[in-house]
Amino acid sequence: MSTLIFRACAPLIVGLMLVFSVFVLLRGHNEPGGGFIGGLIAGAAFAALGMAFGTDAVRRALRVHPTAIAGYGLLAALLSGLPSLFLGQPFMTGIWYETTILGSYLALSTVLVFDIGVFLIVAGTFTSIALSLEEDGE
Image (cartoon, rainbow, N blue to C red; front, side, top):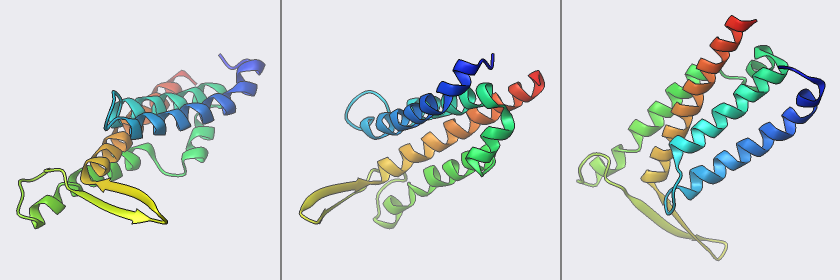
């Protein structure tokens, strides 16, 4: 399904999907969404890119193997639980760090690091599966 119109629109669609996936990831702390849904959207963006231009284009765009992305996500999710152990809390207890940068309030948390890890796990796994299915079709 690689028509001329689809190939022309695919870069714009992929870019919008990736921006939206990051929006859903960051919005997930207070409203529906988060790392899992954001990762699915990012994986679907790379699958659409693969349908338009082939799997080699996706591999060039990623620059890192999708299973390595999932591995880095697993590492980030596991490491997000360590700060709570150092503070005498149970493993995976949410820790927040609040600061002011250039007069703007910023709250960082281990929960966000965990969600980013889940995002990377899902996006990497979904992309890896999509690439293997598309390679079988070629």
